[in-house]
Length: 87
Image 1 (tube, rainbow, N blue to C red):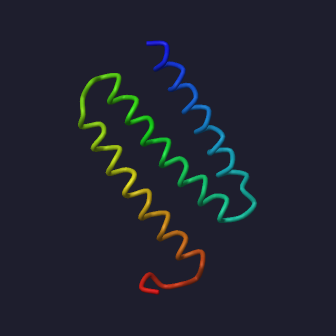
Image 2: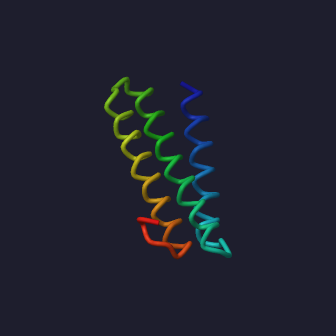
C-alpha cells in the first residue's frame, strides 16, 4: 500500500500549493483557478479513498463534488466577467 501513501502525499502537496496560490494570488482569476484545482484534488482524494476502502459510493461523492465545483467555477467566472447568468 505504499502507492496509496505516495499518491496521498502528492495530492496533499498539490493542495498546499493551491492554498498558497489562493492566498497569494495577485488577481481574482488566479484565485479562481486555485479554487477549481482544489475541487479537482478533492475528487482525487475521494477516488483514492474509494480504492483504499473498496466502497463505490465515495466515487459518487467525487462525481457530485466535481459537478458542484464546475458549476461554482462557471458562476464565479461569470461574476468576475461582469455578466449576468443568462448572457
